[in-house]
Image (cartoon, rainbow, N blue to C red; front, side):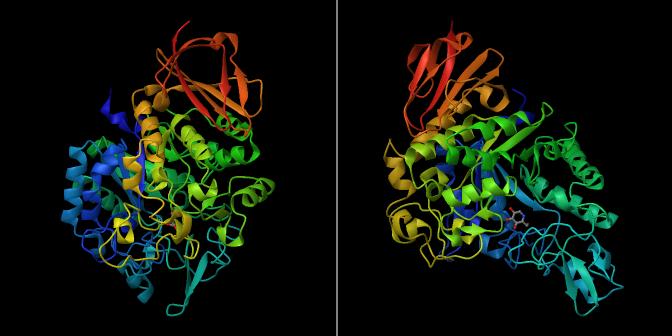
Length: 532
Ligand code: NOJ
């Protein structure tokens, strides 16, 4: 196996470092805490950890507002702690990627401080300034619940600056070649330190041009390719993963001809997985995947169910959004911007069969899966916390005070009620072979023994019932049949003649000759063709 393509078979695990494990009792998760917990992550059979931003930051956007690209925030430890983490992870064959926030800095970054101090500063041009807020009119406002414009007025120098996110996150000016080079240096710095790549935050918005929606512009792609070129020539096993909330056709441009991003989140697929569950009908999944262009051999989709943001419903129709809000966000406080600020288990009313079904999709649809920390044990959220913080609460390790997360006072209120750490924690689940953790671990383990999941083709199989989703994943000689029942009633699935034959049930290890399958409500079946 070519190691350069490791990400095509990998299972990823996303972590909020602040919320994962505190090693020194200050109430904040830190690098040493994560290092202590690598065994847990290895137990889950994860290949790569994605650590959310750990740079020094005033935390107006939980670290996506960076004040210094060349350090880690004190609360997480020192650069040496990061090096130690990387060494310990690599010793376990686990890679580590970090967030790379290219589009904007914090307004506390020295570059912006200097830029805003004086119109004649050498740093003025690091950001996008304008005399008028009428430029780039009509460009959508992403944090629409809070920001009313993409321009913010600067009193001192009497100009507006451009920001696609919070006004505390001024956009860098990528038309400035010095900025372009600065960010290449940042990339080189972290890869030299041993980091295995980046989840690139908001690469869509690097350039602005009048008369466009200022998204995915050709200039943006040209620059992103420069980063890729640096990576290919100096760090050939490192990867770039694109966070771009776009339709499949625009998204696939981020792969270009295999010389831009290695991976991109399949944003439109994610809400369609939930929509299919809400409608007991998987048609939206089939449609979006049929609409998804083939991507170059060395590229891969990243698929996910939840992450640290709201479950984004930008990519569905108004009607579908209303339906999903009714089904998955029945209380107004569960809604944020155009999405749902809840964790996976509560969204699915903690119904175990649905949680397993949706994870079965995560691990068998084309792409590499990303698990959001805590979802492997069915953690809940805390809606009392503002913005997206309710899904970024401390990892629940055990039943000791503060869930074993810290000996001090946690940086935030923990989850309460049915999902508190007495009810949901890693230690209890590890000890129970029937737990969600073990069910997911089993899926991951099987997935890792079969390249068809990460590399194979997908062919949808017609079924006798619209509530059934059946597909074949094929890679070389390997042929795996995956069947899901999206309904709350039992069904029987009659296999088309060409698919009938002898299978190994990968989840039970039994050999079965199959003409038809009995499907319990919300059940999933992974069958490997053995012979005809
Ligand atoms: C996308 C990140 O996922 C989100 O958390 C952040 O607020 C924005 N980018 C801005 O960096």
